[in-house]
Amino acid sequence: MPQMFYLFHFFLLLMAVSFSAQLQAQVRDQHSFSNPEQISSRHLLLDVTVDFDKSELRGFVEHQLKRQQQDANTLVLDSRALVIEKVLQQKADGQWASAYFQLGEAAGILGQSLSIQLSPGSQKVRVYYHTTADSSGLQWLSPAQTSEKQQPFLFSQSQAIHARSWIPLQDTPAVRVSYQARIRTPKQLLAVMSADNSKNTERDGDYHFDMPQPVPSYLLALAVGDLHFQSMSAQTGVYAEKTWLKKAVNEFADTQAMMDVASKLYGQYPWGRYDLLILPASFPFGGMENPRLSFITPTVITGDKSLVSLIAHELAHSWSGNLITNSNWEDLWLNEGFTNFFENRLMAEVYGKGRADMEYSLSVAELTRTMPDLTQADQALKLKLQGRDPDEAFSPVAYVKGQLFLSFLEQRFGRERFDQFVSLYFKTFAFRSMDTARFLQFLQTNLLDKYPQVVSKAEVEQWVFQGGLPDTYPKRPSDAFSDVEKQLALFVAGTPQWQTSQWTVHQWLHLLDKLPRQLSGQQLINLDQQFGFSQSQNAELFVAWSRLAVPLNYEALKQPLRQFLLKVGRSKFVVPLYRALAHNPHWQDFAKQVYQQARPGYHPLTQAQVDKIVQ
Ligand code: BES
Ligand code: ZN
Image (cartoon, rainbow, N blue to C red; front, side, top):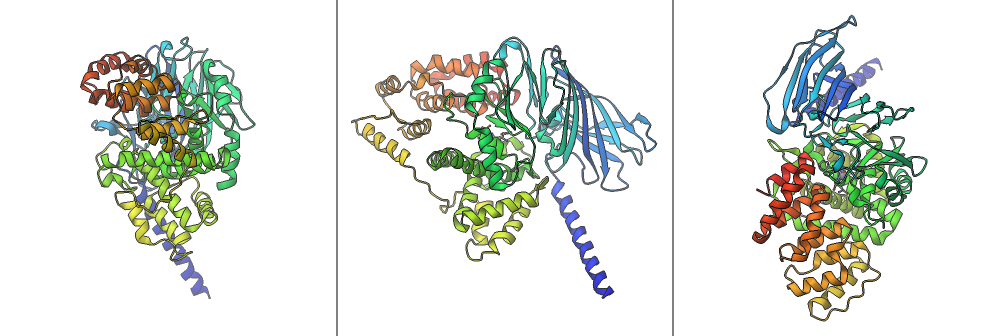
């Protein structure tokens, strides 16, 4: 019997060794210089002053360390466009002393390694630093660039690898840290973070934050501005400038309902509160899933809740992404594909199957439109990003093809079994990182092997590792869209009989997707007069119309388009618009003129993208 016992223990030991080997293999992230497999940062203390005069953050970050290899004495952090002033370490006897550090050569988007020599037994280091004008993760806005135009504004955007441009840290999604922060700002401004706000949120320019749950670096987030708070429900509320506060509260009133549905589907909401922060219109994304506080573009506040799937999306990330995190940017589909799938489930539950079906079809249309522009390799879910900017991984492939793969599994195994599988996945790997190989293993064990002959390994591998879109994805026809197509056919035949008074925004979007790309000037004028596309206050509609009308030289669009590009900096909108303008020789000068005026108001990431289009 004792022999059996030892054998069993030996077996456990073997398992543990192979598990930690797997962990180590997993943390090797080509987009980070850091060495968490030797020494990892476990907890951060951020103490910075927000200086709007100099447009810089200044202060220190303290890292609490854990030696994964006992003899390791060099801590490697990531940094980019930072000035490192000094580094201290707390020695085994508790005394603080300076530590020798060295910055590696600048390597483009990756920035520079920051290597710090530690004495044996040192448990903490403090890096004193300040940010610079090239800190790509921060946007500093002058009062004129805000909605209220009275106070300046600052916000961070860390995903994918921009956290290193405002905090020197181990900038890989395979490492998680809990954090505390003290943020000093001008007295009249409020600071918020992806954390618990202090109990004492008196507006005094000295703010304390606590994030007890460990999060990956790309979820560290800070915003400072003339912000006000309004509660929506027990767990949800909105931070915004005054202009947006009431409008946002009305638009996003269903957030608590979404949370309740999500918790019922896939397990209790793990982060306590869920608040929304409405950013100035230059925010480069639709939304960013910063834990406890999603960052949201004001361009989804339309007055009719037509674009609130964005909230469902960012909320869904509270599970897919924030709880289970892609360990590498090559596995981004695990974050975004799961989230798109989850988002659509939430939309169906809260707003009905009809709406969710329309959103699903619009996503499929976007995927099939963009797929041909991508290489075969970039059409696979598992990406290869060696030597590339991870921001390039964000294409509809990760989002929509990922979603369709999961929908395919759901259809084959049945909703009940698939829901169970997803719940088990979230429960099993909570607060850990995940890569494609380990996900496939889990899928094999918990679905493929459990219910044999439903889906083959070859089918899974085609979805994950090959280009193209397998035709096995579930089709979800929509009556509302069939009506659009019927009316469109009459229009194309020259006998329009529009009956659109009951149409939703999604139907209009479908119409604009399907309208022939060759329309006469008179047809454009008629459509615009009847339906007012050029005046639409719905950014999605306005942009879809513009993408149709710019190549056709529709002059009446110029004024509203100029206004839109001067106001909105969301890259999903402005990049395709500038691309359409640059493609049309008659509109290139217009593009240059507008961009020259608009550029200072765009986020550095958006500027970099548009710089490549408009010369
Ligand atoms: N995590 C992304 C935001 C993001 C995208 C960060 C690219 C860094 C690079 C966020 O969850 C997201 O997907 N936002 C989308 C909206 C969504 C409904 C598809 C966006 O910003 O448009
Ligand atoms: Zn997302």
